[in-house]
Image (cartoon, rainbow, N blue to C red; front, top):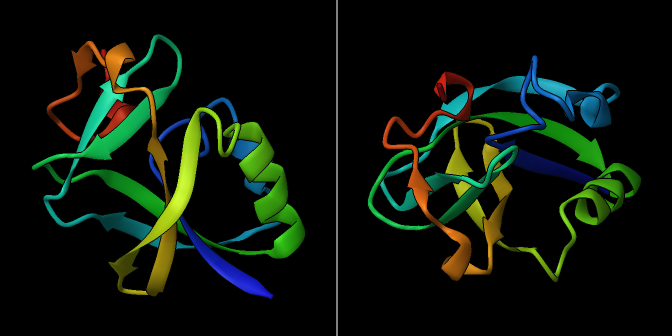
Length: 116
């Protein structure tokens, strides 16, 4: 089965975990509706529900690759993948962070690649 996945952090082009998506098909960039907030967890990002738009990329991948990324994202412990968002390419999964007590550094730009 094929899946669409919206990535917003270390899985994006040029970032530390992008190799996990090397055999996935890059469909394009996307900005979410203003329904989220992006935080810096010192080395990786966290997205939770909020009132900002998030910049990211959409990929087409298979079941096996999605399972590997679920493991990378520590689903269902650290992140959850229960929600899909609308993109120009179709409905895409998004990973949401679970432990909101760890959220200190808000990235108001909504773009992990523009962090300082």
